[in-house]
Image (cartoon, rainbow, N blue to C red; front, side, top):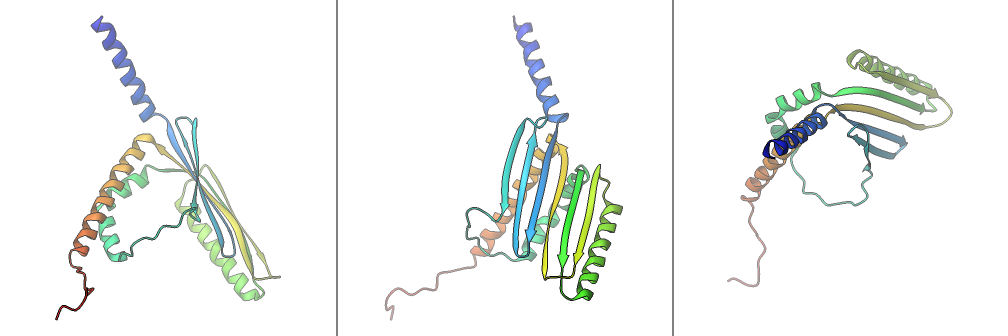
Length: 197
């Protein structure tokens, strides 16, 4: 009986390992912009695309007030985890890269310059990234001052890579909280209550 239960436990462990090692997690970032209006959505597909999430990253639904932090401190914290972050990025595979931009300006020199600049960026992207699907397009217009378009980035990676990223994220947040506590320790309340003379 114990041997029979042990077989089931081993089978469950084997199935869990398969679920962690074999399936890919798919993250699809979608950017849509029209002049100053920007919308960023994230689609997440897990476990053979059976589990799906749709999240609007920007504009946020609830605006929260955040404490201002110096960017130099954030860079120091990220530098400590730079090796781990680079190793994670190497394990990410880009499946699809889509970009379709409409740029229009009354001044033809500006339109031509921006068109050449974006095409140059497209050329660099195609040389760096090896994607299964890639579509990069820009349509110049000379009738009005306007910029609009959409960009989609589809990436995939193994589930265990996602777990590693969660560990790194937790370490970064812990370091940020420690740095915040150090900075707060130098502050003191200078508000006077009544006449102390």
